[in-house]
Length: 310
Image (cartoon, rainbow, N blue to C red; front, side, top):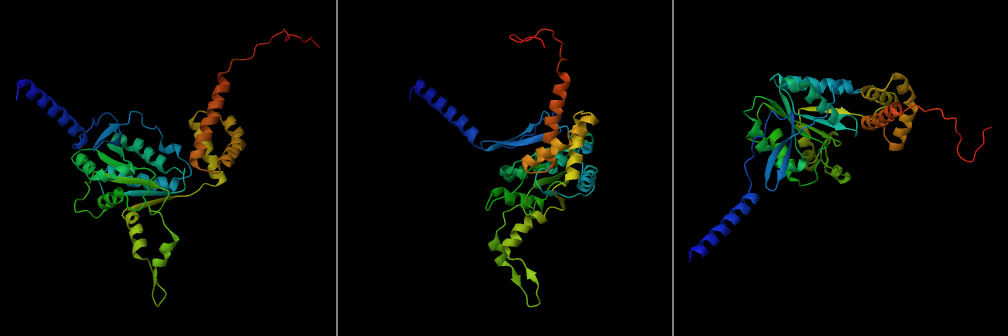
């Protein structure tokens, strides 16, 4: 074989190796932990990486109204975790737009100065949870793995991975990591009428769930703390609207004027949720500030063309 052919063969082999490197999975590498207090786990081909969140939502605990009971329980659990004492994984469930995700973000901002960090993971990437656990095990910070709007369909791979990390795997999660998840489903899996047929009844009237139902309940039961959220009443919705309007710097007089429009806004959206209240407040505050920035009208003695003075 000539030297030219040999060099061409080496070049092709090198190109092939580079392509294989892109396909083959790589060990998860640590990010710059000082770059942010929150990170997103992203898959790139077969490999994953942690991306710092450059602008973390600036929501505070004081911004969240009408969820005082839920707030107290989550803040207490998070404070225990940050202090290094026993705390639970948390499942926040209930009506949409009632502040589940916002409460977790507010806790992050509250406890970040004490070493709390957050890693957001999509449910499709939960199969890589063991790699994340190993990556942060020796870090001094306290990590919350955040799964937003979590629910599973039958057979999804992330289901078993999450179940094992929560409780059941021979390799326990490190004590500096907890999982906080939000969901509209209390049991995280779709439930069907036919599953009621798997219940068994004893002679004395006791009811026992069948294996299908037991399996669906088993995942949510592995979260040590359940926090439930409920639809807001009209007074609660109006209180949330007022809070967000104050957050955006709207004057009290304008807040009173916004009462009826905020109810119309909710009626059009078909929901009195905290999310709808926040969206209305943004719209109203934007209009309020736009009106303040408009230049004052200048008196004009001239009449439009074609009109005579009366």
